[in-house]
Image 1 (cartoon, rainbow, N blue to C red):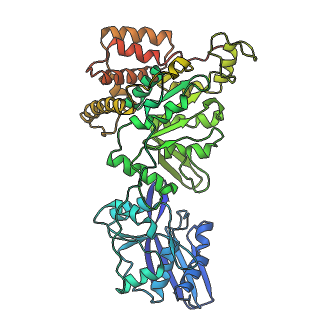
Image 2: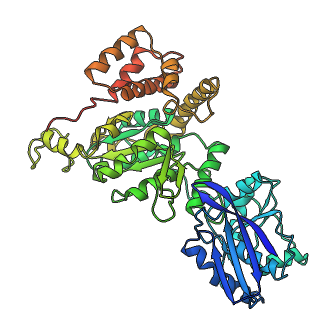
Image 3: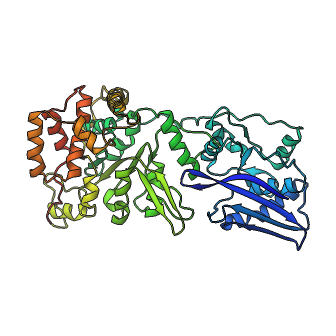
Length: 510
């Protein structure tokens, strides 16, 4: 007799159905797991053996074969422990054989029989609901699974004994409740920054349209402070965005105690990060910082200090909003619709833009050009707003705090986003679509300038040597400026300001 238990394998944030087949027959004593298991799955034999012994059961002195079907799909992770153990328990009569028929099962076992947390419970729960199954998951992950829907039958035991007692009817488990993580504190406020009105304006524009942003200025000018305050003026997450972000965090093991966070991600990798750390990959093709920043902000401080090849790996995700990690036998796709905010010094000395400063490496322009050459032109072409952030003077620092903070800026951002949502909904696009992410053909339609504006951008496209991408990105920023002003039509003043944030596309000659 073969006992079947449903579980999943993860490809990106997708949960693919896997059938765990357990067969116990007379023969030489052996415990085999087949079906392309990785090292963690192969080691589940010892964890299952120890957990069953700790629960008062023993493996029979027979041949035990566990097949993970489909056999050509790679199986990775420790979440196969629980379905294998339950299949063995059903095969030896410790639990009713039909008790597992309506459930998808995942969980890791400790040697004392406890069921410990695993990654990917949320996408597994959503996949189980789509297949008309309930879910059995570790107790710490129960609040996470409960988000998949109120009608999903969720069992979240903390041990094998508790689950066996539930099936016998001697201990009934209650359905877990969904949980939201408590905020770690209030978000940094724009009112903390004195001066830098131009940079604050650029930050508000970036938040309103979802545009990529680059701060260029000397050390201590407040570039990192400005970037850290962008989440405080972004609109709150929609339910769909919350679910998408949480699924990525679940697969990456970023959820604590199964509680979802209702804040937009803010990821700040160090400039020593590898390509796999930034875009994903490595063992198990895990999501990288670009995917973990989905729906939020990816902040790259000291941009030229990143390896050029690592930076260029962001070019495709910035265009498509997803990362594809290819392997010899499969490929994984992760969402990566992030908002890039970068900061850099004008040169390695950091003072090239200061009046009267003479760089020891040679002329200021050459020092700045050599340092900026570490950033490729195609990557810069994908950044809509490039802002010079001057050093803050002592006169600015002794002023009282500014009258406006994040609350006032967030209100203007919300109004601009609402206008975009209505506009793009009329064209059948999702409500989360922004000026920065709408199709190029549509932006030409909705950002069509007046006659004066058309003449300006025609001239500027030649003088600034704008690429086709740069032309469209200028229109996107101009459309956002019009939304902030409540204007239905893009005018010359909006295009002029948008062009001022772009600058020349080619690097300065050394």
